[in-house]
Every structure is written in structure tokens, then in C-alpha cells.
Amino acid sequence: MKVILSRKGFDKQCGRIENLIIDNKVLLPFPIPREEDNCKYEDLNYEYNGVSKNLKEILDDLNFDFSQGLCCHLDPDLLYMKKKDNRNNDAAFGQCGPSATYLKESVKVDEGDLFLFFSQFRKCEIKNGKYNYLGTKDDVVHLIWGYLQVGEILDNKNKMKEKCPNHSHTQGKYWDLNNFNNKDNVIYLASNKLKFKSELNGYGVFPFNEIRVLTRKGCSMANWDKSKFNNISILENHIPGKKGKKRKNSSNNPENCIYYKGQWQELGLEPSEDTVEWVNSLFKDLN
Image 1 (cartoon, rainbow, N blue to C red):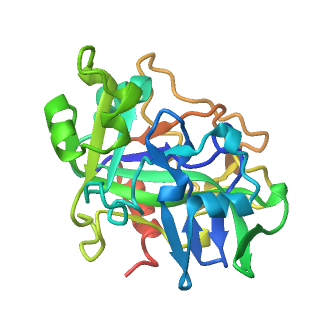
Image 2 (image 1 turned 90 degrees about the vertical axis):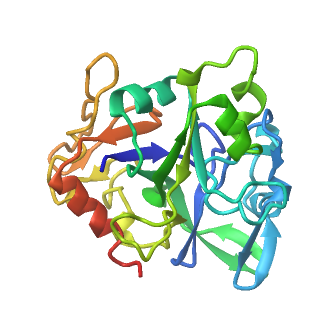
């Protein structure tokens, strides 16, 4: 089983505010704004403790800058696919362009491989029905918020349209029937159950737990704590891209932290017993 760390959800460039850790229990990742997509924030409802609000209302609470867009790129779709009437019922994740090429040609993603989605998160509370951030920007952390184990790979335009007619990667700029390049567009459908923990679905959003926080305490968000990886070289043993160069650890505290510069999207980890052990540790609190 290969493991891919995938940056998805609001970040410094897209969204520019933090995804939510609600009451130290629940994670709410936001799909990034993109006007080219046809899914609106107001179309997506989120319920917590019996109170339902759409994402536009929640983002209003958090002073989101809607000049970035009223529509969103709902990808990966792990929360809403069964709550919006005109969508297929499969959890799915799509990728295109150089990132898709990296996944297909360098990582060689196959059925059974596991995506772990991470982004920036901040604690919040809900007071009088309104969502409010807690703490300061210094309290923002990177954490792993969701997962998808690959059950089927769609890189054929007819299958993509047939199985995911409403997915972002079968519409708009991602989909031009007259100039479609299979190398540049792919959708990964989730498996029905996790192969290594069969009582769990093949996709999901994690509850909040410190075991899935990547940021080292007292450090900036992108400095990941090596002790979370049992101080082994899981992250250093990642799969390079076409040029054959691995990412350099740019942390100013390299003994304790690892920091890869840039807004990279995908990082494939070399298969190993250490990687499998680390993945199992991420799921140990789930039944």
C-alpha cells in the first residue's frame, strides 16, 4: 500500500482563513473557492449538535472574503455527496495537470493505495449559533483531516462522465471533449471499506485527535514534528517527481522538524513497514 499526503481544503492561498476544529471534537474542512465550478457554498449544509447552517452562513460568521468566489471546488467530496440531490453517491477525489501526472507516473497510484488529506486548522466555538475562531494565528496547525482508499481509478472520459457526472473534474475547465488528455485528468473513487481496518468505510473525515496534528508545538504551522512519525524517515523517503529530486528539509530545526517549502499538493511515500505502522497509528482511536 502506497500512502499519499495530499494538501486539500482552505490554505494561505485559497480561502485564506482556517478550516475548523469545533469544540476540540469535530473537524470541518472547507472546499476551496473557485468560480469556474457550479457548486455554491450555500448549497452545502452542515449540521452540528442539531443545528444546521449552510457553508456560506458559516463562512460569513468567520469573515470570509467572498470576492474569492461564491462557488467552490468540492474535491475531495467526503462529506456532502449524499446530502446534495443531484450528485452521485460515491466519495471521490480528482486531480489534474502536473499533480495528476505525478500521481500516475511517479507514484503510480493503484487500487488499495491511501490518500491522507491535510490542511491548516484552527480551534473554534459556536456561541449563540455563530461560529467564532479561538486563539490567534499562532495557534494554527497542519493536521490530517480525512482519508480515501482507492477502490477504482477513472482516467477514461466515458467512465468519468458515466460514474461521476457532477464531479468538478467532469465539468468546466477540466472537461473539454474536443481536447481531452487522459494524462491530465483522473478521478479516484473510494473503496467500500478500508482494507486494513474493515469495520471502517473506505473514506471519511477524522474526528479531532492530537495524534493527527502534524505541526510541532511551539513551531510555525509548516514545521512538522518528527516525533509524530516515530522519528523515522517516513517523510524523507518520499517519491520524487520526474526530475528525480526529493524535496529538501528546509526547517531551521531539522533534528526535530521537517519542512518542505512551497504549496505542493501531493507527496507520495515509499511503501515500507514503517509507513504502514504509522498509518495504523493514525486510525487507532477509530472503531
